[in-house]
Image (cartoon, rainbow, N blue to C red; front, top):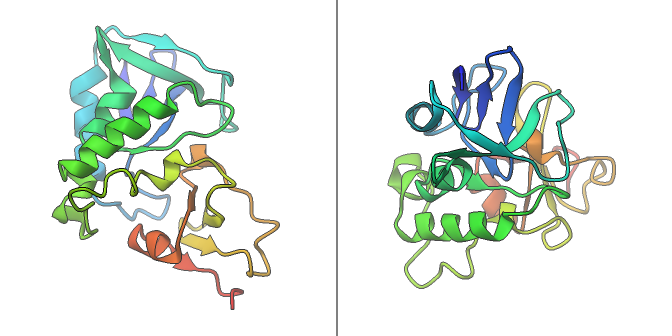
Length: 202
């Protein structure tokens, strides 16, 4: 890998970019607002892949709408995508049809939550999963659309806005996981993750 961009994106030697499939790491938004642990996630990714020979595998999709290659990445025997999730520096975030390893990522996130690692600890101010709750608090990102109905959209300004089914804009709001957007099961989950309710909601 030539250069790490952030916790889930790298730049290749030919200048093209590669996005890790199935995970979502904290990042700096287009407005310059840094999500909690964005620097730590980037640093971890640097230590795992930068300047190293890696192997990549595909799923169903070859590229996202930004032209970035979508890949699973391995540094030797280490599955980089899963390692970042297990360290609490990325969320499990499957996006159909690229869901080959969604169960492995969900299990990795459950272990990170149980160990209160990274974003699941107190450093980000978000209550971690209590002991014994790991089965029920598995990542919302690991639940495919349809199981949870709240849409976590990211506006062009970088602002995170969630839409419940009663919002006027709900039906026309489309969620793109590769852009960092996600589904939530409850409004509390959305707000804890940094989203606010859309103004056209009751």
